[in-house]
Image 1 (cartoon, helix red, strand yellow):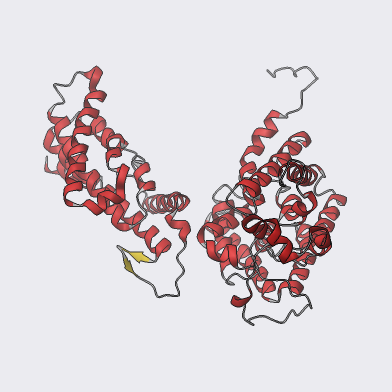
Image 2: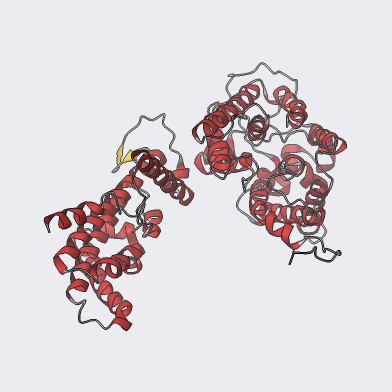
Length: 205
Length: 315
């Protein structure tokens, strides 16, 4: 039993890490990771939503009729996202200004729905929340990593702190949209290369 | 490949004469780094090592030709990584790339270093003083004819470069600011004609690109309809270089002759659209990049009808 919890907890950090392994949630990963701070903020917001939605959906899994389950999940997720959005506006106003429309759009983030459908609907609430925590942390780490690379190369700063001297000319390619695609593609390739070297099987969520 | 490379040497030499000896360094960095990246990519991806076959060198040369002469000398090396590794080898290697690698690298550099890529133009050195390297490049930057025409209008253009009919010849010979390879229309056209004579390329793409640029500029480029200056449109900017060397790239252009004509007209129309209405003064780079992924579709559309009945066993 403990092993099951441990596997679920570590699964989201490497085996099922979004958006690389679980190739879901790419839209925020491309759109908001202009800086490490944005990536971290988005990751934390999404993690909160996944943990809560996994818990609620798992608790209600025997009550929700099978035929209308997607609509029910969306209603639950939308409620939770609204809560997160209001909390962010109250306590982290500048960050919520920067992330803008992408906070409400967590509703349609496929990771949340994917974990609800793929995990929470079949497992007890506590295990589902552990899964949400693990996936959320993995997503937050990935977004922070993507955001860091793009911010360091594209703006010469990290979490807003300047890293290089005056002579460094930032490559603005990396803070624009194509840079996001290239960064994510290269990170995915590096992860696959490493996994192949270690002989791991490629696990898709 | 080396023949095409050879055709690009005369424009490069003229460019060295016009802009100074740093052009030679830029071209050398570009060619050598493209070949090095090609070798490294092939090694990493476990492909046969063919970095001496000239295709990487040609990409490097074309990359040097489409960047301004006053850029930092290591910038083409970064472009080479984009062109060869991401633009060519990650797409599957030579023959599988969707986009022209040199132009992809130019678009990448333009997005990465917008200031250097749009302001590092050098004025032509009229008395042929080619040893003026490091003599204050920063203070000498100027604007390209198309940029002046776009931002300040025809009056400023005439004030700066003279009446259009007086400057056709100097533009054609190469005495104007511009990217390294696009200054001399004459040498580019001569090289292109030689390639046609050797049957490396056919007339379809260059003629349709240049013809559509000229006709569309003539119709829409002026104050009123049919008031544009087609000759100036063809001679300024990279139209000739793009039409002869970039658009005709075997890998990224259609193979059917009729499809090539449509492809060329598409490039010309997009170029004129970007020049006249878009945000950039010169549009042929993006026009070619936009038409590149359409070439397989064009080939399918213009597939010749087969008259013979199907063979036995074939549907």
